[in-house]
Length: 294
Ligand SMILES: NC(=O)c1ccc[n+]([C@@H]2O[C@H](COP(=O)([O-])OP(=O)(O)OC[C@H]3O[C@@H](n4cnc5c(N)ncnc54)[C@H](OP(=O)(O)O)[C@@H]3O)[C@@H](O)[C@H]2O)c1
Image (cartoon, rainbow, N blue to C red; front, side, top):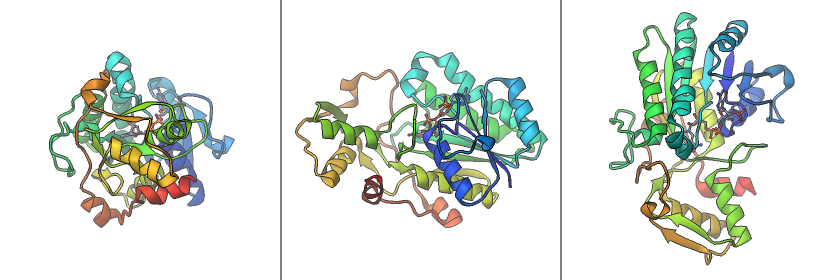
């Protein structure tokens, strides 16, 4: 097995590098910018813009991976709403290029996708449930999924996940848990929605599952998330309780009041039966990971 990781500077990308090193899996880490992952050896890193077709094919041919774990994406859903063309280029068109290479070279393509492919009216969702994306970001991911599903001779997996959190060096953006902990500690006033329900996912659990799918050569869709579905307000409350921080500066608001550019599904969450049965997936609880974050 030889894995090429895209988006290795991102939160999941960094955890994948950590697992590949620990399990001595040969890998090439790639990302748009210079290597910001302090753990990734220089010899294992290559700067790569996944929208640059010529260079992408050069790198892929030279490394000849057996598996690609494609985490690179524009992940800010409001940015995608505002710049739909860039979102389409990075999140959908790059997948077309990767699928073409993988089909021609017997390489397994794993795509990271999202709970946002669902409209949030009937969570928790199974892998067989029908997507109905509400935003530009969510549509770009659904279209990317469809590329994999319609490409002939392609070995693929689609890993949908939810609200990924954890700690890694030099991230380009924070995540809910780290942000909320810092905001609660600083006692600055914050507004938190109580009408969106998510199952927060510990990035290391997700990386473990991604790698496990590759090691088992499993194909198809997998739902991977944390074990509990909570409202965003409940998540922040649990963080405050765990670290013994005050909630006095936190106001409960509705999604409508926030007026974010991209619409969000109200209630997602996943049924994890398939992941548990096929992969032996056992996600950490929020409290277990808050302990680790200390
Ligand atoms: N985070 C979540 O809550 C969440 C939830 C559901 C699904 N997902 C999916 O899971 C995957 C991983 O998420 P994440 O949180 O690890 O993402 P992230 O931390 O935002 O990292 C994404 C990475 O993509 C890279 N990238 C962006 N444009 C690129 C390009 N043109 N060429 C090459 N690399 C590019 C960036 O690289 P540089 O840093 O080098 O610029 C960035 O590090 C994504 O596909 C996301 O859609 C995430």
